[in-house]
Length: 451
Image (cartoon, rainbow, N blue to C red):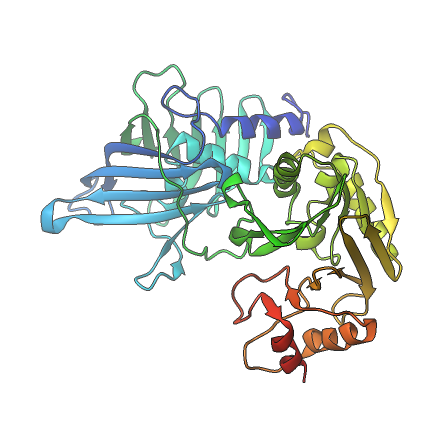
């Protein structure tokens, strides 16, 4: 019942994203990461001395929130002097986790009577990030109720009341209910209160949000790491005259820009429409030229991901003929739950198949796209710049210093030789780090590893 008694789902998705930019201090987000502090308390009824007994612990709360990355750091400080303790939680894409003494991620623990799911929603900005992180997991029942999940708990948000409620269960007391009461935009006191079984178990008085430095989170224990970039991640490196790369360390991948006299060619995607739309804005702003072609090495999601952002700009997609059905499917797909620009203003696909080789050339630059047998996917494009003798190898090259190549990397040696390419530098798309590999390899290193 997408339209039942409420707004259409795609409008709710838009509204949830807009909510992310509210702030409890004046309800308007500053640009970039912000910090908030609060004073309050949490109770703990885990070891009562008599029925109804509980302990109360004063707490200082410190939050750092980066809305663009749907990420946050939550710190709860209790005690004084030698008794002072800080419980630290990390919030990423709607999930909360902690780390052990060696920096390894672990499942989050409770904080007094507050479960991890409740901690993840302890501030309205965090709640809005949870809602926006996976709008396809938000069920809009009507104008007064939206159901969503957070850290293995099912919540109902009541926008008009500005409360979030969940059912709870105890082996002793059975069924019950927990409610988070948020301040409204007109509330002078920006207080968040948590009630369970009719009793307040936590309350925090928040101060105004202030800008803070950017921050990084330790690796998440959950399998789906956020793959989102910001403007701060985008830096252009000139590998050779008119050949640039953008090393996106946050998502461990590389995008290429080839600058011709009157247009640009972009090589490789970056997981999503959101990322590629941002890249497109920054690329066209830097070079003051339109992007004419977009190509990707192969059909895996990291590389084809974001193709919709380029189609939205009227760019021609270059790919093997076998990949055209997947590109067309991506362009025609519904993105109502996470609307991108193409969802809001559909455009037709401009596609050119690369059979064996495609050459793009003017007086300034020559780029060759070779469709090869890769031992990885049925069709695979590598990118060769003969003037600078640079080869873009996608994810085919796993060079480990001092070790011979194997598998698809070994296959690449034979391919380069058979095509007669003169290569001084082999530059990978992925990975930039990890796996014990080196992401730029010179001719001598490659020649030795191939042998």
